[in-house]
Length: 195
Length: 314
Image (cartoon, rainbow over all chains, first blue to last red):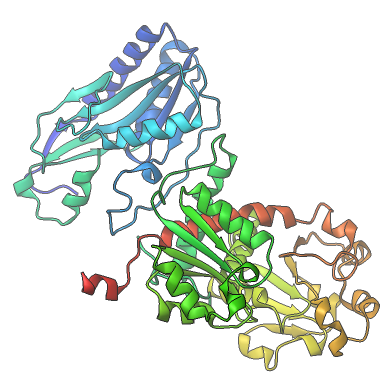
């Protein structure tokens, strides 16, 4: 939801460029696409994971396996949240043992989502490495977690709302920042736990 | 998202959106059963009591595994080795076990209404695992889940329940759940095994199996409760098999692709023949696997839902 005060911090071209740069960085660091698997965190990381894989395919001509992971069952607040999260389907149709696993999410915030994702990955197998790629790093970490690939660092207040919208491969991409004061919606709090 | 109720007692009256939330969540949980480590953490720290006053293989093991796969602690109770033998009442039994800090109770009992009664005695979330001839909601849900996976949707599906409908809690849960989701349901069996005023369920009633199977997608075969055979409800097993048994000859004669289901335990050679039970149309073992996903979904969705009383006491 966009309010009049929300600021567009990345438009489609900037998002495209960030994904292309991350794809090159991933390939450079891992010496090519052969050892890679990509897992996007549902829901925000799913589109980005597909886009990253498509970009890698454009660059190197190799289809990297893409999976999707719902991390809600691994959250640390599952028993504290009165409004239970809806569980979506995790789809990892390949072996992750010995692979360089690129974990993808849209916004890195408190780090708790990534902690949950790491716990879940360990239950699926033993990758050679796990590397984190995010489009936005907005700070405010509550756990010792950092990203390996960042589209853009954005200083935010804790209560601000960062909204990433992917509209498919040809549609409009947009990252907007809604300052805390501009939003009086009760959804803000729920969003604030995310990340 | 939360279910409207903090207990699962029956499918009758359960809102459509709650049935769909359970089925959708079960779809997500189904995938966990194919993982190398079939265990996820959401019920960590919660304790579930399995209170089975009646014998059970599938349902009890299915619930126990579902609980363990959600990382709950479980305790199981069977009356034969408990103080029930010394005359302790149901109410005292559960209140004493709950005093040891139980969060959820899965209950099976020969008397209809026991799960509801427990909601009046204790504060835990209650899951009905079969009460008398009333309902067996998780079995109904897993049957519906299996049909939905096969056909993609329930709306418009034509389902026939065959056999002892009168004494079957599985039949009742099927009927209520399927009708709420828009399937059309028919029942077929000897009149002595059909409920009185069966039309009031809103189902088509048949005594002739070939007629009943006309235009049907799913045939859900209910167990003939052999322990009732001597009570004169049907003359002989052989006659029952001839008139109501699902045989490969019958399937060949009707020449249509049915999905054959059975909640178990099967009386092979009575209501279903070996060829059908183990044949290509049968999804009987798929039902059993799906049952775990459905029970995991139910336990997950009910977990942590507190009663209004408990909240106001705080």
